[in-house]
Image (tube, rainbow, N blue to C red):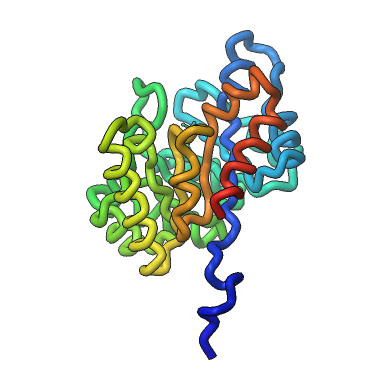
Length: 252
Ligand code: PXP
């Protein structure tokens, strides 16, 4: 029996919001003490309707540090998504902490933030054992990739169950280019889903640009950080997360 007339079937599933709280640690580290505490931020995110906490433990520990992983996990029942470079050091940390999910990102020491997607196609041999070890440990692997067919194909070859599509080009686009970048993300979300990969998206999302992305029906999760923490300075973290959540829900 077909369900095409059932409106509930036509509606895309709820879109999860993962909140990246790295920049709470950036502010804390500016003074070297314990305030503001990322663990407290994680509790507030849970109260405000966030669905997960994302943390990027960088090689240079410029924001989150090792001890934060356990403290944040202990402070909240929300699933933890650990963003990590494809290195032996980060693999060992992930296997020790066993977060719900690990998102493999490219990492360059001199960059201000994760500037581009992971070259999953070019790095197959380096990534394959890492994806395998994380998967064997029960950690859901995601690859942070540019919205390009060859990267989706590479994720399929690697057996990654999730890809996170880099929305940086979309977020920085202006004029007619916005629609071009949006279409790339929509097309790659559809391609991933068609091939059994759960598509997520993130980077540079704000109140102003989130809705066209949130409306892409195949997307299951957005990961948003810098803007939410920045807005929290003016209106509080609970309010900034709630507002983003409401904007996302409006188009679902
Ligand atoms: N997703 C991934 C994989 C990232 O590396 C980042 C930035 O750390 C984000 C999402 C969040 O990006 P932003 O801080 O610009 O919202």
